[in-house]
Amino acid sequence: MNKPEYLFKLKPTQIILMSFMFMIFLGTLLLMLPISTTNNLGLHPIDALFVSTSASCVTGLTVVDLHNDLTFFGTVVMLFLIQIGGLGIMTLATLAVHTLGYRFRLKENIVLQESLNQGGRAGLVDLIRSMIKYTFAIEIFFAVVLTIHFYPEFGANAVGYGIFHSVSAFCNAGFDLFGNYDSLCKRNDDYFLMTCIGLLIILGGIGFTVIADVLHGKSWRKYSLHTKIVIAMNLALIVVGTILIFGMEYRNSDTVGNLSVPAQLANACFTSVSCRTAGFNTFDLAKSEQITQLTMIILMFIGASPLSTGGGIKSTTFFIILQSMWSVFRGKSEIIVFGRTISRELRDQAFAIFTMGTIWVVTAGIILSVIDGEVHELEEVIFETVSGFGTVGMGIGITSEWNMWGKLILTLTMLVGRVGIMTFMLSLITQKNTRIKYPAENIMIG
Image (cartoon, rainbow, N blue to C red; front, side, top):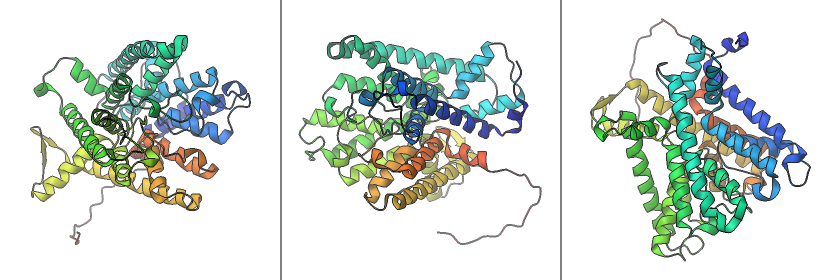
């Protein structure tokens, strides 16, 4: 099996970016077909591009009501875009050609390393097989559970509802079929549904290597450093987010103030889990307190964990930044975590990702504010921007109000958030090595 030689002239990061762009383009064409919409007209090209990007990048921001505006065909297109986007088109393409007997060249192995964020080439295909196995096992199990749960309400249609929401939640996409852009707002007392969706979000967001570590029955001491950090950070962020959201909203009658305390805690916990990268919501976010929205912006910006279906700068990046600052305060030159040293290279990458992500969000937010003409409050624009960058998809009711240019800016932001800010920038910048060494000199900072 031969492959076009021009592919080998591209950088691995460029191939990864192009794979997502190809999937988005294909999804756009399909959603523009008359068969995709209930009005038999197809989606407008800009709306189709926006929704296709949102599904392919497992974001969840949408300018159409999936339940009322899309046909069965359109919904299936969205389902496949979400599934492929969650796993990554490179992952599925790799397994397909490997099954057909193709042997990968060095450059292709490097592309796989980049797409899977792996340091070595050993066991890449086995890792991909495990990713797909875990994905379908988890999604099928919860699809059956949710189908049984939905059956009294939807009858035979419960099968479709179970499959779609299982895939959407595990892939951290946040799309739903309940209609009227309500997400789970009218089901905020359905604890079983919130538990299932929440577990799917967590499993999809912690990353496949962590799932493998846990399923192999290892003890905590034998877990990899990566697994330990991911588990610790996820627990900390969920707990802190729950406390802050509950503390700010328990008196707000427009959100959860009229619920019992256990129900308030359940909704706060679900929101803390979901706003990291999934996008399901159980109360009207536009009516939440400003400090709650700020908390959610921070959680959305951090996002999920590496090699997961989520976006953001990633929990491990945020952990390294926090540990690096703590080391500076203590006058330590090294970061020691669970008896292991974090390399300086990883520290530099973490700060680069954090800085580039911040610059992108601020710049995109400024552009959107100018395009918006100050129709919406700045915090609403920033919320929407971070939601797109973190591939969260939580909205506060203004997504459908953007004009063409606003939708295009958010489309690009969602793509950057899904492929990763580092991958996106490296695909555009040519790196050159130099042997020239210059003398060092101190400058004043701080």
